[in-house]
Amino acid sequence: MALSRIWSAFILISILVAVFKFSACGEKQIFSSMVVGKKGDSVQVQISPVALADPAKVGALDSNGVVGAGTAKTRIQVANGIVDTCKDAVTLCLELIGMLALFMGFMSIAERAGGINLLSRIIGPFFSKLFPEVPKGHPAMGHMIMNFSANLLGLDNAATPFGLKAMQSLQELNPQKEVASNAQIMFLCLHAAGFNIIPVSVIAIRAAQHASDPTDVFLPCMIVTFVGTMTAMFIVSFRQQIKLLQPVIIGWVLGISSIVALIVWYITTLDANGVQFFSSVLSNGLILLVFLLIVLGGIYKKIDIFDAFIDGAKNGFETAVRIIPYLVGILVAVSMLRTSGTFDAVIDGIKSFFAYLGADTRFVDGLPTALIRPLSGGAARGMMVSTMIANGPDSFASRLSGIFQGASDTTFYVVAVYFGAVSIKNTRYAIGSMLLADLAGVITSIILAYIFFGNLS
Image 1 (cartoon, rainbow, N blue to C red):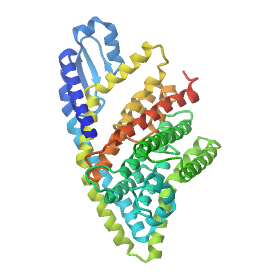
Image 2 (image 1 turned 60 degrees about the vertical axis):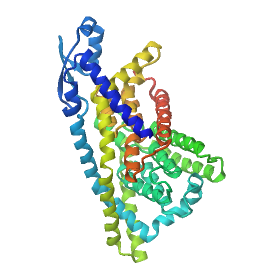
Image 3 (image 1 turned 120 degrees about the vertical axis):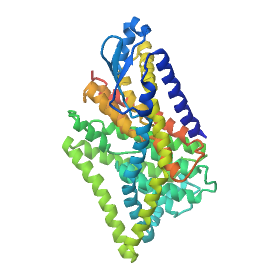
Image 4 (image 1 turned 180 degrees about the vertical axis):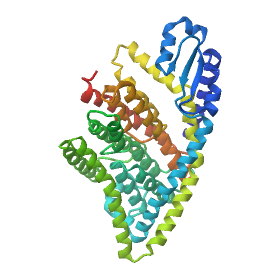
């Protein structure tokens, strides 16, 4: 029900804002922009007499991408309309088919060879405390640790198939098939927090934009994702009455923290090229190592490796097709928020509020990435690039935007895809917990940005 209310609110608010802009602000093309418009289109905007009488209002429009003079101005559309967004959602799912088929095929080999059960036994003592409803040695434990490991190293392509497999395994234990179980909520909240050592994509984008030190945001990103993950764990544990002050949990958290600290220390000894090389070798090398171990395990157990791969790959295809309706729904709602101007209005309101309080408003220029991040990873990436182009790659706002981009996963995308893959309709308190963890990440990002880069102009 939570997702239903939020989705409905997105649609209703977007349409109401569009009606207001059409009637009061003179944006006669806004309805067609929302439905059939394309990202990058030039849209003519007729400025109302009220706005023309107040130069400050016209100036505000100019700062938001409206250019020109007189009563007719041009606005550049920031997102595709509803029609093209539906196509984008289906295209995204089609692109997922190959990756899901590949990784789920290898997961199937690992299951038949007993590799998943081995992972379950290794991680079982820790996970059994966080997931008390999951039986000891259940394959879901292995699937979840594969997902968390992929997230840890920034392997987005691998994390999604592993995560979907984990949700399917947990669904087998779920007595109410349309209601999210405690274990599914805990897993998805930890996954969405996205604990990550090296934000590979952020570093790559900063390098492409010619930042003086593309890797300078990696340490803040790692700290933020750690804070977000711990926040998610505390919130869900409180709701599920799980005691965290247990020797096993404390030991594992301290152990993981120590390993991360050693990796961070090593990375700090490298230059920018060294960090990119290390992250590339670590990320891609891990994928190949996993494939190697799985195949060797299948050979050792004398199973029909290719037959196992095909069975798993079929499941990947079916999963990709099954999530299409959920993804269409979420992406269309996000598109309407952006094309109606609702999102820009929220940003302007926040900036005006902090300016009125006399606070430092530099962080607001990087805030669009944080606000769009729970809705769309691609849109957030675009926001980050836009911030870097507008303010320069070495500006405070651009660095903060990079931290936001590397700080967490896309909450509503995760909810739509993962719960949609197992036909969960009642998400209970999952979305609220994820958004609170996102908020903790946003606040931590801003604080760290001022600590690390506060002396920048």
